[in-house]
Length: 310
Image 1 (cartoon, rainbow, N blue to C red):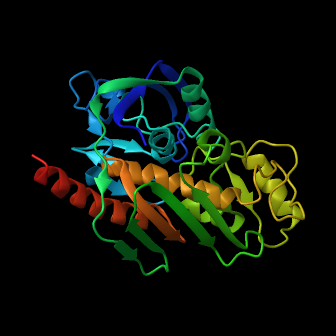
Image 2 (image 1 turned 90 degrees about the horizontal axis):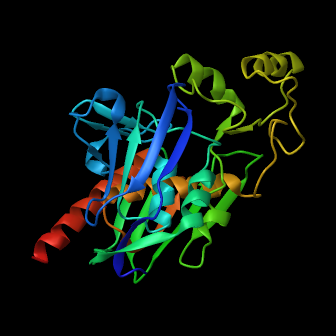
């Protein structure tokens, strides 16, 4: 574990579209001074608009992504970027957007990790403050999701997923100090079930979704005319259901890519605690809702801990 805080050595720019808004967005990530944390700037709203701290206090929505809202200034779908910053020990950075949603890129954190690791990090002359747990924290919700964070000397995550899917089966993924995040976790893409596509479109979501930024799981055979209709929507020539149960537009990067992506989401949502954590996370059927619920409790514990330190 790092003793001191770190920031970026370089300035990085990314352009793309938002997964849910479909809007084109340009994003700039640059170094920030010690104790700055991770903060977002909405350049499209003018210079006088305040920054939005990457903090669970401002989480306002968790449906198909995590949304921050501070005094009406919104930042959507930040979890993949935040997961990369957290896993790669980047404590301080300023992120400037010219729209409300972080670009989805390829649906993973791959491009962020590749950019950050190329230049390395800048160590800063300020200590890292770790949340040290003195008890376990437990959360369960009505959907059957469960999450427990145990006290530990290090940070680790074990994720298990079970969607009742014959295609996915039960998958498991792990993150700890031995994990090579840029190679093992960052490339893992978001996923959606075929039967969810129509309802998501009707609910005004995934306007920017396409076959370049998501795995589509097809649980059962689908009539070819339905696949042809979807191919037109996504502007591809041909779509088929491959025997493994996915649409033919892509191939898996890992056999348990979906579990690894859920782990990336946990990293991103836990980054919003605002402090690196010493603890062992066990997550079953995790999602942004339960991630954010337990992150709020962890932040409360962190604020109490650091208040006692002064």
